[in-house]
Image (cartoon, rainbow, N blue to C red; front, side, top):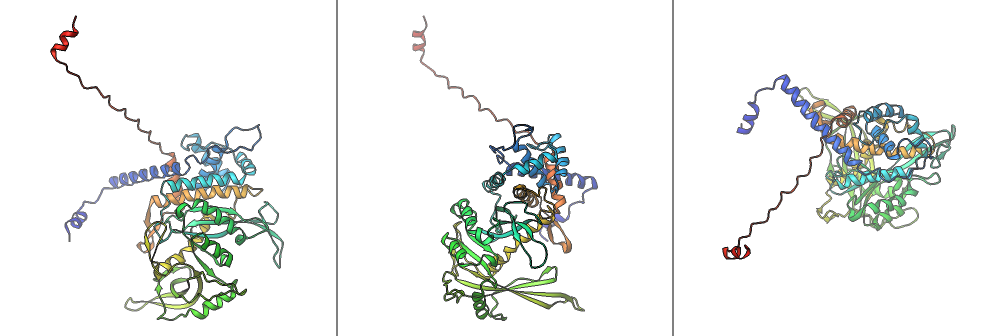
Length: 488
């Protein structure tokens, strides 16, 4: 045993009082970090916002009301009444900087009259603050990656918004749904949301994708935000892939039956065999038991054409993710075995170079099969992190605070700001030991309490700037003869 390990193991156990003081000190430190993080994200995000309300009844400014809604979203408050109670208590106690104790009726009327462009501007300012503070770290994947997918915000039997799409099922009543297209950074550990745009009622997600990509490229100066796009099979069209390549970006898109000719070519040229496997993940726990994903690839894609005989010569590779579902069994001597009971295949196409290349960040990247497997699987983190958390913890699709006009879309931007703040706070707080002594995140209730306690704790006053010491001029000496001449 080394001297350092012996010294660590020979420490005396702490008393219960010392353990309590240590936990209290650690919690106070986490609270200060979370409060500083909240101020950093919302800095100057509510300045110079237009106010379209009437002249009468303007008790609170638009900035203070929006700050109250954002703080309510960060605290996982699902109704405006709870925002009135919790945020109002923090505002009256002087803890919530910028928020006010407004009634739920005032907040509801603001959402009815608030243009969604104003909420979008606030959201973009918060994303800019996160990027300027270097909180958007690209450390999980070899390339800066953006996952794009559509999300249903609300479904009702009446037309509640001008963006709502009419859907007539074969059986049942006609209903309307509000769709948005979202993008999250899957290369960052926090999986932050960086973009959202409403889908007009007369088009779909694929029709709005070119305009969304142009908006993203305006914020992607020197490819500092993303250089690789991953999307589902609905976006795998010749026009979208050509546009992505024209922007100087890479893509990984899933193949589905929407491209039958390409799907048939991929099935014929990619063989599933033990010798052809290039990369394989470990057995992971899932809802169906355990699963393992294997990668199979082909580079013979230069002559691929779709059903309209249009050439897809810009492709460089096509690969298959073969997923095996199994049950775990323990032998009499403790040996572990897995019995496969189901399989699933997913095909992808990409224009990633096969040889090493230099990324936009200046580092040399070689997309090995293992890294390609990790990057392709990371696309579903937009569902597991962003969409699932917003539907479960925030109840975005079931209990929207406003269900009329543009208030649904406007509040979705504010909810995304709260999601980003909660995700950053979740990673700031750290991990805890879960089942089988594995690291897992703190619960959302714990994150909510940390944000509330951090904002309620007294803020340290800024230190006064130290005045520079006065610079005294050096005394000048002159000969005695000169002094005598100067005397009368």
